[in-house]
Length: 199
Ligand SMILES: [Mg+2]
Image (cartoon, rainbow, N blue to C red):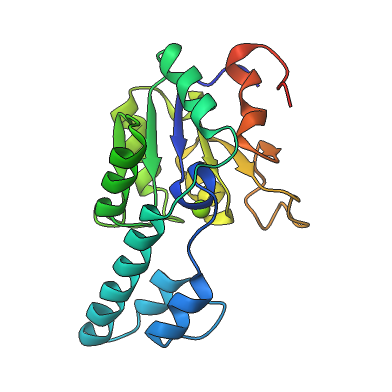
């Protein structure tokens, strides 16, 4: 893969270690195990969704307050900044959680798209908006995530895709057939540094 000219990152489990306990969130909200939470809420009435949103936000903000960075996160973001590669965050999380993350770790992203901004992943809408904001064609933009919705959303927008997951899932077709599958963000450094990862 030639060096992407812009990068879109998922937040939870990609830039940070996985923190959100989705099973506990579903239990507390009162939705069936296994279903994606935002989609499960679509069929519920307004009062249920409002109460669920309060629970989600509490979990999301608590998670950021306790977040630790994923392996290679700081190094990869530093390399991209040094090479003036613009970066963005695309998340199903809320804007306040992204703001707290950026403030806590002192990072800078050119653009952010959250579920407060429009349809969430796996819709490709956010990826399209961010490609436009970053100023490069989707085909020259790499989207990095740890879940199939990340890959499916980015592919729908025409981006290149990297799945950060160890071990890799068995059925990559079901996961949107990512262009790259890597065990950590460390393994993306060579795309821009031209060197093999040091560990
Ligand atoms: Mg994630």
